[in-house]
Image (cartoon, rainbow, N blue to C red):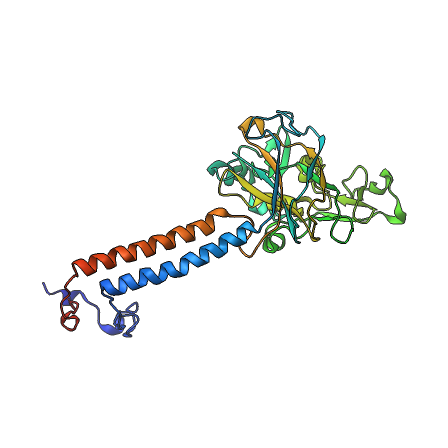
Length: 377
């Protein structure tokens, strides 16, 4: 039977592509032929570009000043500076000192580093509820956060592994001077992605807070059904007292209650340290930004940090470190990026010379290109 008998008339073919070169794949195309000479030239030029680029990237990385101190279970088996064993929320206070041997130019980034912590594990990375983090009521929170949705009869908000394994060590800059002799100051704002702050994290829809009237900082400020606090919160930033309301506070444990040493009830899930933690790392050894110093530090000046240690790493065989570093246009210190460019460039040059020698000794005889064509069928 002729196939044409099964075809609809053109006027009834409503999904027929338009008769244009793009839709009918009739656009002229370039079909390159791998001529040995051009392959050799291409490899040579690629190597000439990659090698100096790699050396420049390596130079920029070498100019980065990085100071690192592992303070809980160091890799070399030494006694940790601030070890807490398996005591969760130990609140152990200790200090770390850094003395740079070179000048450190602002901005100076402050990171914490964890090793052997697998944020990329499938169960871990899926254990959260996006609607809940954005401040809404989610009907799927129990399923999305399983098995960490409740503690007994108390509902967690936010729930899930990610939010409830938040890195809760606290770093405080105690002393250190800049080039001009002014005391150093660590900033902890502006460390999270602006898109996360604007779109992904928000306090519960019914959350409210206001300053206590008449500078009243006693428990009476929280009187009334409009407020869920038992006593007002003293905000260290402006030294004023605030009362606040969280919905279903009697049956829900909110983030500020889980991590009271780091997160205020006025911030909740909008705390930038928490938001940085919730942007998961792809590798088990990772660094996350904690803050920055916008002043340059001279060589030989001692910078002292106080650590409030709470996060346990011994249980999973990891380590905790505090890192100070300058940066460049490619980020922090990275010895692998420049070297990879260098070695790939040398490989291209060596390959080009190899093919050149082979082509000179036994050239490949190509036919006349004008007779080459592609089949139309």
